[in-house]
Image 1: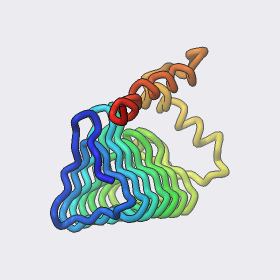
Image 2: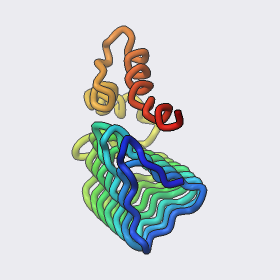
Image 3: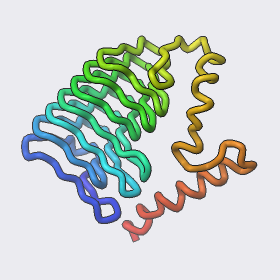
Length: 198
């Protein structure tokens, strides 16, 4: 499904291909030779944009999102693996994001890097060109420290100051009703979908 979001419509190069059961929604530009496979979701909301370069392959059930505060860009010749999740990140040329990997808001992944199966690149994290996040490992910080998943306390000590609720949603983590504030804001922002279907 190719659809507008709040008066922003996708721009798809004639040499790109989108599977019929994929979703491309909002201010999304897809370059020549790129392929968006079955079940993939590319959604740009709240005035944000997604830019997909040339010869990018977005595989089955991958999700690429941009939100009001965080555009998302893929350079040329990238692969986004099945069931992976990329939101509000800047991904340079020739990057491989493997199956089940997650890349979060404000992250930057340098040219020729790999995020392997179930790897995570946290928000506001910068991977140098040619970096590798091993299977299941976590990259966090700027520049990134790459840690195994059993190092939770070390990861949290780096992640906490990055302030996920504040950076992503503009809500203070110490607010007594942090989740009520976040969900109320999201509900309001995503209400545009309800209006489109009225």
